[in-house]
Image 1 (tube, rainbow, N blue to C red):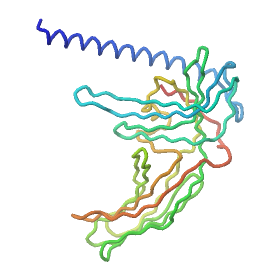
Image 2 (tube, rainbow, N blue to C red):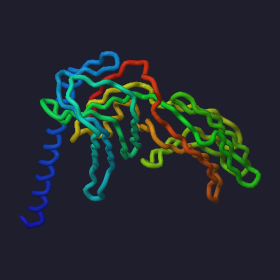
Image 3 (cartoon, rainbow, N blue to C red):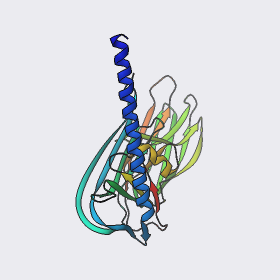
Image 4 (tube, rainbow, N blue to C red):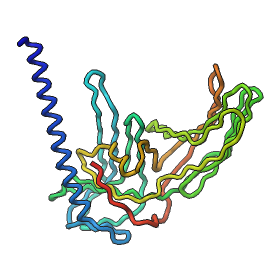
Length: 281
């Protein structure tokens, strides 16, 4: 066998070994997280753990994307920032900021409040309370753009956990207009409403309302698995600075835009429903 062929076979065996080890790590992590999830209980606003343990409190940031050309693979980067630690068998639940973006192409940007189990049989398991409450402020509530004598106008309203409004267009040569919700940091984007030609259309966009307790693994959890918890192929939910962008579609010329900042922060209070526990590995 020529040297090149032998090296290729060695490479295949190495890749197969890596895949099998990753599968084993994932299976062990899923088993650990499933056992933890089944042994926890929720008592009002308190999450009761199966035993007293040392906990790290902090924020987990996960980024995921496909990289490479010839040997394409999904790359996940995890960053844990801790802000303190304590020893207890319970976690007092309180709403905190979170953000989850997962695109159709699997690009992912996730920021979650977490408690890390730092010792014992559940070591490196993460518990993330996603308890959605919202205070939403728009810098401007009226947006407009025009081209010659044609125009598009958006009236925007904010409410508790939602935004709504009406898009008007009056066009002849232009195709119409659309409104998008954009999270600039993650490049997450979602179309809110579109009018083709002249007309008007109302829209309403509610942000995630269901409280969750996510049980993950510090070293293994895949951000794409969050689709199961949020029940959607494409996810754009949570707090932070967004942009509402109005775009007028002009044939053969540069589109006209108008935008405003949308600030979404946690609000006082607590979700009415009891959180649902989900394993994400």
